[in-house]
Length: 308
Image (cartoon, rainbow, N blue to C red; front, side, top):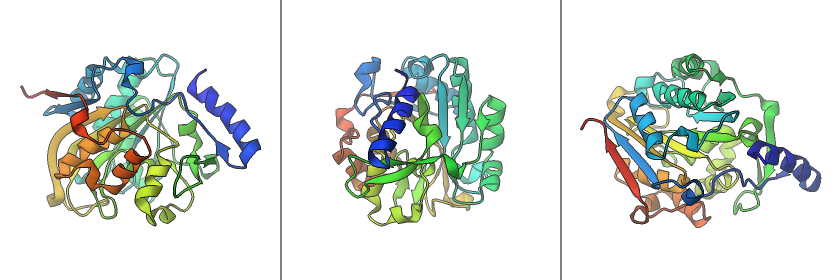
């Protein structure tokens, strides 16, 4: 059964039984599940190329995009488009990274590729100034604004601080969910990476997540797990995030980090800021919930330097 068909069945059964949708998502890869896909390593680290080359190389290191995207799949590519900032300010995902992923998915035979985010600043300005709307459309994706009526309340069976929350149905029903955050400083979370990017697919009063933030964010990530996470660290906002604005706060790193284990990807992402996964509460809580491996010493990490 395709993931989206299973989800739709779960929506019907869960709505009737619980009042909030009760979902179990076997179509989404669980953390440390690389053996199901016969992947050669846990993480792919690519450095010193242009964004398009680095994305292509990251997928190649896992055996190609066809490992993740099949002909006829509906794919959600979820960047961070939260802020009305230009690409060089590094508040949003690099539009070249987004476009490169879309083109690879299209070449793999995806029937639909959707790009969206539940923005913090005014949506039209975020989509336009980030450069993502234009880049994604030109690459062949369908770019939509968030529709409030498409949020569905989901029961969070494994949650410790949250028992249910509203999630965007396009993500729940997709065959493939590619999480594409930018690595940057964050005033609350310290660093925002893949797990934090989940905030862009939820509705409701997102401000309420800030109380007991680390546990609530981990709880949310028990519901929707990306097929693959690709961290954009081409330009990294080192200070005054998440919105930034000052180019002096941006560091050019020309790096992409990819993997199917969301905790492992974020744990490595933390090292860009001279931190460990255990230094960030939400990564630690996600690990405690069994969402992935936090100890980088237990992971097989493949590295490619495109400048060589």
